[in-house]
Length: 165
Image 1 (tube, rainbow, N blue to C red):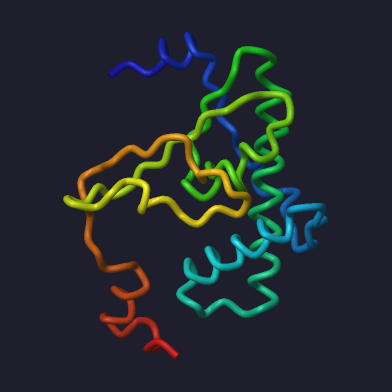
Image 2: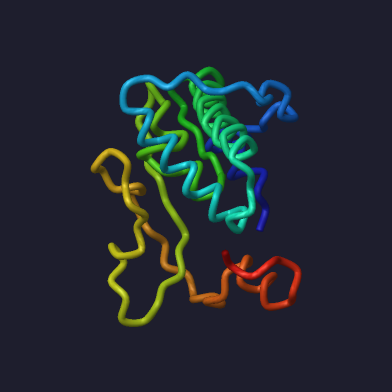
């Protein structure tokens, strides 16, 4: 498939993270409603690091994730005018309740998450718990199921991570 016409026609904007230049170790300003966002990111980052991340690294990582979302939203709004943007990001950054769409102040957005479609599983049960009462995504794209074993479990099974505490 030729992607250039798609990119030109829809003015696809690639949102790069400026080589992480301004995502240092500082904290993030928490304003009304943000505490739930911080808590949600903490749980995600703790699980993503197989419960092995130190408290100080966890806080720095959470702050970086939130700053990335804010920065990508600002870049999208600054770079697109009224044309819109398609951002291809990980599901955590696409979440309406805590990701990039939360910080899009001048644009509407639609979010899509690609999730494992399991026979007999209702799609709405695949949504993560929301931090603000709204669904985390507007649409779910049900993909063929993948392995049930998590990366952390696979590393533990191979002896590359310590057993669960």
